[in-house]
Amino acid sequence: MPLRHAVEDFCRRTNGVKLGVTVPEVAKEVITAMDEDGMSDQYLSQFRSILGLFSRSFREMIMEARGDEIDSWLWSKKLSQVTRNNRLTLLRVMFGFAKQRNYLPALEPTAPDLVPKVNKVKAVPRMDTTG
Image 1 (tube, helix red, strand yellow):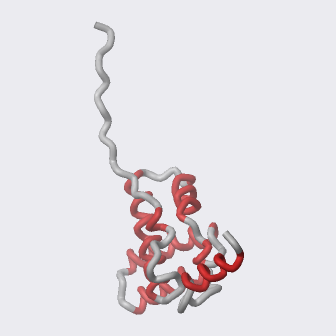
Image 2 (cartoon, rainbow, N blue to C red):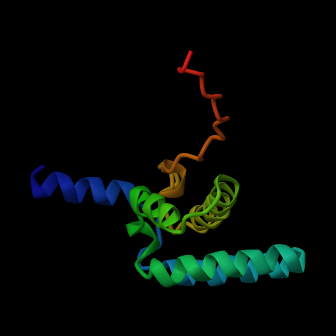
Image 3 (cartoon, rainbow, N blue to C red):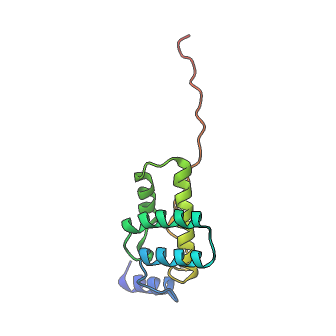
């Protein structure tokens, strides 16, 4: 792609977007907003914990976070399916907040939106092959 087209695409995508906001800044801002909105202590504690872990691993600008990196980060934690999906949901909430604050392009999916949830797969009974 020629440089001119790349610049035009970047300008189109980021029109009205506040650039330079980092993941840790958004994490802190969303937690503050939830606290001010009266979210339960248990919910806030969970949010602080998960977003704290995420922010230590993702220090870059929120616009630079990629779905494949988030997916790899979640898998690296060796979580149960339910816990992994719950953490992904919390990340989607944070990135949705960032989109509402114009830290991300409004018409594009966020990085966690590109990460599939894990579907529970029931174990298939083994067939007896001895007989």
